[in-house]
Image (cartoon, rainbow, N blue to C red; front, side, top):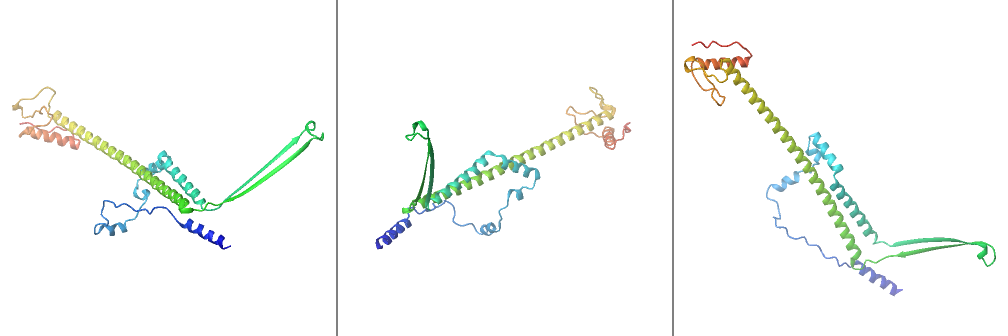
Length: 261
């Protein structure tokens, strides 16, 4: 009896031993503490979801579709499930294993092959029961379970990283598209302004009686547009003609001003 108790005590002591090396986090080449004032701000900062950060309904819809259909994110999520299952399997090895097997056979012997001359049916059934329990000597099973746990945590963080990158890519692409659309609208407005300015200049020149390819002399009291299309600065009735015609074009009055010198 004493030997049995002593043997159990020795086995329990060996199972309590562990050869898992202690993990020591390497020293990171960054300051150990935050600068003054930053730590208090970090404590007040709350982690918000992407739905709370991005308020645009269309952007929220696109991000939701990306999270639902992206294949890389699906693979990452499946890796998390696989590592979780491996962690459960490794944890089950710490407990006794019970195996139960059953088998049954039935054989019919025809009459011409039977010694008695009669057909017969024989039945045979077997059942086996096994119980096993591996003692975790020196912490082998616990070490494997810890490895499975760290793999599970790493895969979950990898999934989060893929999700954050996906949300950032969709948001960046959407905002870039919005900026390009705004730039296109601004370019269209600028072109419209140029066209209206050109129409106004054409109205000014036609109101002064200019014709294409003809320029009145300096004694006529009228001005001639320069080759660049801009009206040169001039005094007298020519400037009055240009100002009056421009004002008429702005107010929508087609009456020509009096430019007689």
